[in-house]
Length: 243
Image 1 (tube, one colour):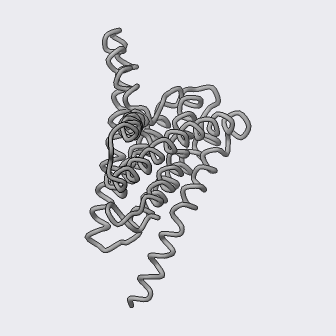
Image 2 (image 1 turned 60 degrees about the vertical axis):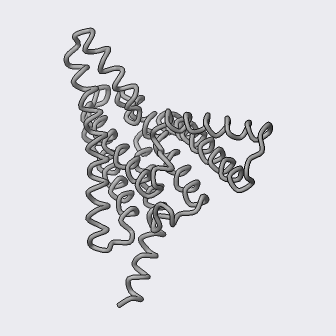
């Protein structure tokens, strides 16, 4: 699921990876808001908040919104640097390693938040880390799918969903090539499922925050490592056979 990219990937691969990481993104986004007071995957909202805070002359809040956006972009930059470097060095599991890096960062943040952060004190630094992680994840799935899937960008997914619904409805009134109609249905299903999984992730994040707040980031990290493990194992096995 994490060894093939772009045109080499099947619809099922994109659906499985996109849906799994959408659950992670939804969970992290809600956790960021409940625990730190900021949506860490919602850059559209943060950009709007930045404009509002500037208008209100709230310099501190405006600066935080700005650095949240910068952190997201930095995450995407780091992902791209890792992928490009991995390609040059022949790392077949470079995308899997990106998810492992995301998991390691979440574990480190979980340790800090659980044992080294004073209860009830806002932690803007943690929000920046989560924003970085979401940028890293979104760039990972965007690169590997050839921009077909974006797990944190629900606005884009809903736009694509609306387009596919329109094309699907049009097929009832105008003749469309069967092969193209099949592609429309697959894309419609893909985008609808990713949006649904993002919402499910948000619900799980809220429930996890209520019942196991100390361990929820560790649970998310385990999910990411579980997703990455088959790709890393298969890459190691393939590399061993080549030697």
